[in-house]
Image (cartoon, one colour):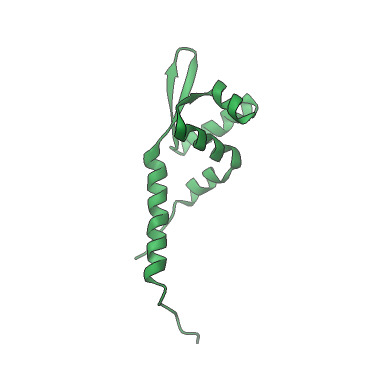
Length: 102
């Protein structure tokens, strides 16, 4: 069984600020103002990271008056977690497989 993990998504989540945003959004839906307060990041920097997360499908937006709220898409995180679980299971079952050296 060949297992693959979404490398592009891992790169998106590997950034410390983006991971912090995802962690915050796992707890509640927040607007940009809340995320600036929570992370201490500049608004323009935060907006760039939110755009990357949105384009990767990790977060979705919800307009509310003049504010935009962001919420995490748990299905995307669960799918990535499942890929890692499959990889771990593959490693467990392959633990006894050893290719002979020539």
